[in-house]
Length: 264
Length: 298
Image 1 (cartoon, chains in turn purple, orange):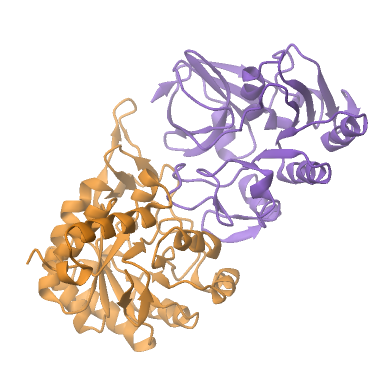
Image 2 (cartoon, each protein chain N blue to C red):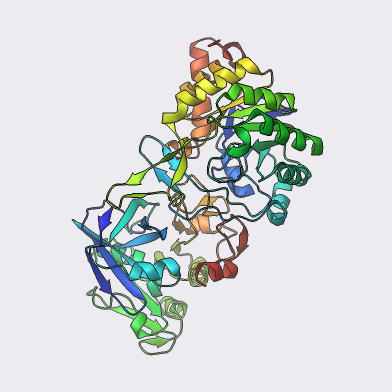
C-alpha cells in the first residue's frame, strides 16, 4: 500500500493524488486504485517523474467522490501499471491532441514525454466551463481551448476546433484523443475522413486489470490488456465502440445505460 | 491432434476454463482462433447477479487469487449473447450454476435450448455463500444436482468439481452415476485469504477467494489421478497448466482434455496454441501419442 503524498485540487470536481514511488510506465497506461472497504477502480496515470506519480480523478460516482476526498497520508492500494499505452509520435510527426474534460489526464504525460522541438503539436482541450479545464499552468506551449458555456476560448466542441485546424491546412499524421466516448468517436470519424491515424483511450468496467476475467471486453478486444488505447486499425472493426459496454453482471447494454449506471 | 470428446470433434486437447474471458461470442471466437479447441462461457446463473466489488482478482506472483463472485446477466437476460452464438463455428461449453437443485435444472433446461455442444455444471465455485461449492463437497448433493439436470437436457453434461471435497473421487463417481458424461477438475483451490499488512485488512472485498495458477497444479494432478481411478467417463484436467509439459503431465494423470485459465495472464491469449505446439513437440520427441500416455501414471 502507498500513502497519499499530496493532493492538488484542480477544481471542485477534479483532484490529482500524488504518490512517492517510482513507476516505469508508458503514457496511457493505468493503475488500479484500491480504497479499503470501498472499492478498486482503474485510473490512468496523469503525471510521472523519477520518484513520484499522480492520478487525476473526476468525482462522478461513489468511488471517485471518496477518492478525491482522500487526504495526505491516507493509505491506498495501487496495482499496475496495466494496459498498452499510447504509441508515441516519431520525430517529424505533426500531431493533434484532443482532450475532453478529465480526458487530458492520460494525454498529459504523453505531452510531457514528447520532444517538442521534433514533433509539431496542436493541443485542443475542451470542458463544460473554464474551471473544468485541467492543468492550466502545466504546459508552456499554446493550447486551444473550448468550453460549452463559452467562458474560455471557442464556445462549442473540440471537434469544431479539430475540423477548423484541418481546414486551416494543418496536416496532422496522428491524433490522440481522450474524453467522453461520443466525442472520441466523432474525432475518429474526422480522422477517418482525412486519413489521419487516431488513437483513443477507452473506459470500461474492469476487475483484474490484466486480461483474465473478461469484465471489460469490447467485442473481441480486452480493454484492460489490449487497450485501453486503441488505434484506427482496431477501431474500424470495433462494432461496440461508442455503442455498447458491459455492466458489472456481464450484461451488454447501450453506452447511455452503461454510463447511467457508472455515474448515477 | 484431433480428438473426439462427447460427440464433438476437437482440434486439440486445450479448453478455456470457465470464468476466463468468456463474456461474449467475439472474445470466445478469438480464444478459439488462438488455438483453443473448446471454449467455456462464464457461468450462467438463474438471476442477474453483479458478483463482488473489487478487488476481485489479485496476481500473487506465484498464482492468482480471485473472488469475482459469479456475475451473470441471468439466463433469460442474454438474448443477444445467445443470438450471436447461434452462428458460431466453434465448439462451445456453457457453464451453469444455481442456488438450489431446482435452479440448476431450470437454468440447464433453458441453456440446452440454445444448443451448446456441452453443459458444464458448476458445483464447485468457492466464491459465493450459497451457490456452487455447497453442492460439490457432498456426494449426495452432487448426485442430486446432476440427476436433476440430466432429466431436463440431452446435451452432454460435464460436472465441474472442487478440490475441497474430502474425497473428490467419490464425488466424481456420484456424478457419473447420476448421468454426467464427463468430469472437469479442478475449480480454484481454497478459499484462501490475503491480508494487507499495512492496513491489516483482507485485500479481496469478499475477503476469501479461490487460488489458481502454477501453485495449484500438484493438487489438480492428484485430483485427476484419483478421479481417473474411480470413473469411466472422460476427464477435463484443469489447474495450473501453462505449458505443453504441464498438459502432458495432466494427461498422464488421466485427463482426456486439458483446461487453461490463469496462464492466459502469463502467456497471453495464444497460450492455447503454444501449449498444443509444445505437446506435439514432446510427443514427437518421445515417439508417443496422446492416447498412449493417457493415465500412464497409474
